[in-house]
Length: 415
Image (cartoon, rainbow, N blue to C red):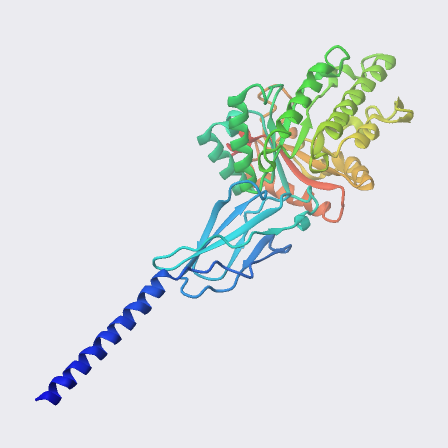
């Protein structure tokens, strides 16, 4: 009987020890911190234009979240959640570095962030090697939330990668509401891999007494860009000054030369402002929508500017980064014929020229006949002609792509 009691006591003690030991291990596991992901790697794949992220698996982790920022000091934003140790980011902004951090989670625990890793600016490629750009003249299409969603969805559907967005002469710094809305629009556009270029123009702005209006508009864009984050900045600016009535062949030659010189001069002044005052001028493109006749109309006139005597087209090509040619016709052969000189010229200068197409029913609005636009033929026919133009310029380094005028009529163009 005594032996049984002793054995029972021993078993009881052993049981207590085992229970204590097990509970201690559970407590240790519960208190053990979850390690953060290590060996995080980020590689840019130029073929797919994605950042390939990978990291080592963390013991007990069942899922991971990926976070990103555009600078080391800006807040990190949620990007994705996965249950593997890799992720491909296809939303990267073309011209920005991107910093990544990874967190992991178990059933009851959450790690701290991994050490940040960046993708260096080896993402840069030919900024104009796109296929589509589009003019947007009503800024409510970008500034108002519901309209913005429709615009960006349309751009994605049609493969639009650059938007020429009407900015007028607004002061984007003084008007805080406008500035806030513009920041949201450009940020969302960039997250959809769409560039945004400011846009404005008025023929009278070539005149010496009115040039200051255009140059103030340029300064407004500079002031805006210098006070917002990279992802919220305009990628460029386009002049749509069309001084046709000031350079008509009906005018005396002396007056034409004077006005063409003003036309060149105001763009030269604007380029100097961008190059001098922008914080990041190398990441900014200054372009112009240009009438299709400057390869003939005006080339017979040598304009002397800054000690150089040449045709207007050649002066302008020296100043801007790109042309958006208003080569509006409804046949590929005509589009090519009108834009060929400009495309070849820009190729020699290491710049780009975009071939413009029109979707406004110009006959209805009294701006020319049906041969100028695709309103009558519709989208399918237009796409066929665009394909012929793109194929023709396939190996021409001066060809930037197709620029479509403009969102309001393009988005309602019949099939």
